[in-house]
Length: 338
Ligand SMILES: NC(=O)c1ccc[n+]([C@@H]2O[C@H](COP(=O)([O-])OP(=O)(O)OC[C@H]3O[C@@H](n4cnc5c(N)ncnc54)[C@H](O)[C@@H]3O)[C@@H](O)[C@H]2O)c1
Image 1 (cartoon, protein in one colour):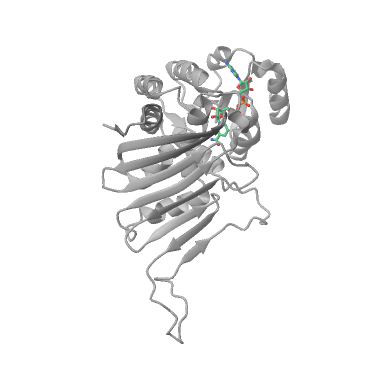
Image 2 (cartoon, helix red, strand yellow):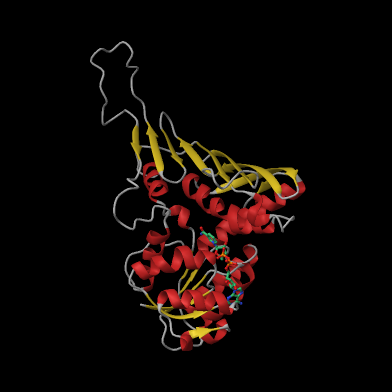
């Protein structure tokens, strides 16, 4: 598979393009408005200067690519995503799919019209630990998820020049607008409360109710150091709960008997707590954050193999929840979701 890639910034350069290379995808062409970034990333991946474009529409017009990838920003994702789909090419797009649900619906319409998939960068679904926990929650023995409790924090670093927090909502919060409904089902009501500790330091408490009756409390904010673990969540069922700490440690609590009076007590496969962590010293280029697995599913989707990659319909759903979260935080009122 040959891909034309638009946006040679930090995320593409450090996370996405190296994983595509591991998957055997040829980076046939690159585009960026920043000539220095373009040259740096082209050098790393052996892309000739003649295959580097300052104008992304010239890359999209090429006849020698099978797909377009992009990691730029909301406005460019909308414009260039539609252009690539209209040109008849499958697209991998980082989040967010535009600036709001209306933009995401335009991308969905372009994907439907062209018959080409638009796969989205919701890699939280693919981190090894999140996948294990998702499979436990959906695996049958867990039963209906009753509650979600979690934190997804960051620091003011990226957002300090953006006092309206648009970037925080679109680039950060959107991930959990996908992950939480994936764990808990369809949200029907949402209430977001906001506390600004100081300009640039925002704390959000978001409450959800789901169609199945479940409840969620999600805390997000820009008031923690990125040098500490930023994510923790737990889903409870009936006498079951699973939690993921720092996207790499899974604990699955079930329903054992008390052991204090049982001198023969041991640990049972059936009822005691299961814990999983990766071996971070293994001599392999493993990506437990999920980018490799997600991009592998994108490649499978483009090549017509079985794939569960998140597509633009998932993006529309996540952006609609995000729009509701912002509207609730702005108005101080609960919002019902259709
Ligand atoms: N899923 C994740 O974990 C994750 C992490 C970081 C960033 N992201 C997403 O990736 C995207 C990029 O983020 P980043 O941190 O790499 O930003 P960045 O600013 O480092 O990179 C964006 C790049 O796009 C280029 N660009 C801007 N307009 C362009 C245009 N019209 N044509 C071609 N190139 C253009 C810029 O010059 C820059 O090099 C964002 O949407 C962000 O939300 C996702």
